[in-house]
Length: 450
Image 1 (spheres, rainbow, N blue to C red):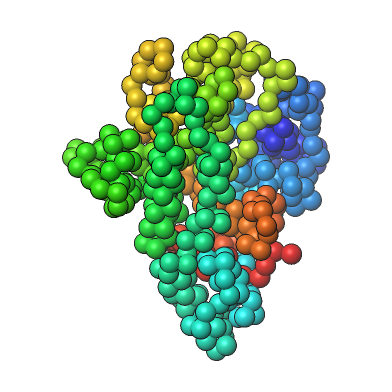
Image 2 (cartoon, helix red, strand yellow; image 1 turned 45 degrees about the vertical axis):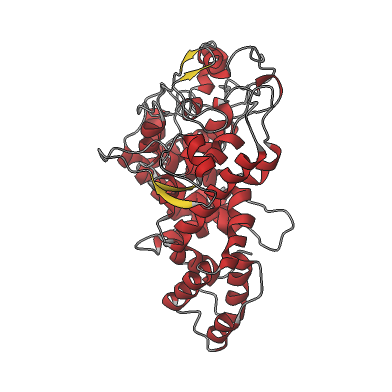
């Protein structure tokens, strides 16, 4: 809970400074005075024994590292913790805007005037290659400074087969699917598993990502799209009828009653569900609400999980993890767990290989839970609805990851900084409709972060 602690403590510090100086309390200080200051007073400790220090935060811009983390928590709505009084949505937005402005996110990103550099960055990002003739021609005529021209180049290049490099080199490591090869489940628990299934799951996600990019969707549709790509093997695995043959094809997941399909978007894809499950060792037969909850929290909301409780008692390997962690004592376990474990509980209808189930090894599946703000998040459909109330958290997160990613590096890095947050907000604030082509064009078309 270190990041969360710093977030609230910093806001508390700002309230104290404003009060002592006689200034009219800002939206930040008012929020802290109402919701946070009683606990985050410099002497309390978190369940993981982290001291909830009080910070001198009179000037947000002087503390960019901690305030950038605070901003991400505000966008995600992940603090205050479960059970504590919370500000309304308007207050969250006002405080987040104040932090954003103070950090510099309200300014315009500086365009890059070096057309050759833009061309090189774009080709390396999308193709892992040198610029081709059409891209070089626009660069030589200084046309890449025009956003519309640059977006057309992005769309052209994404339509090319070489764009598969963007999926394999950026998206798969970011989604942790580069670890899928090490995720083969224990045959003791899954005797019918075959490596070809793992490959089919990866292919489904690859084709899905390429379709989203080429159709120039809003990035948030990665989580909502009501279609996927299946062949006969994968369709049988999911229980989807009327798909035959080895070839993959686009398959609609839409329901006749127009209700939200359970498998919509990334959270319904077996590759994600498999890579967030243990699959080996004593818990190899079971799902992990901790792993899945942390994955959702990091990849959609852009917020790291709390610090783990030291010397935590291990679960009994003879039984599913989820039922055991639900009944742990509030202090010290569930006071922390309940802030993010429900993100994993909501996925319990998916087994470790991504198959839909209504029963686990001990009885009916329990996918009930609530988000940290009290919103119901029982099952994948409700969880998705909760997440989609915070689309800017994901847009900010994915923009930061693209900014942090270096195609030249031998090992992908997605470490965000205050600078990536500021640039991400500058880029997004300059867009009317976030779309992949506009986002990518803005990232390569602005001066690199120094």
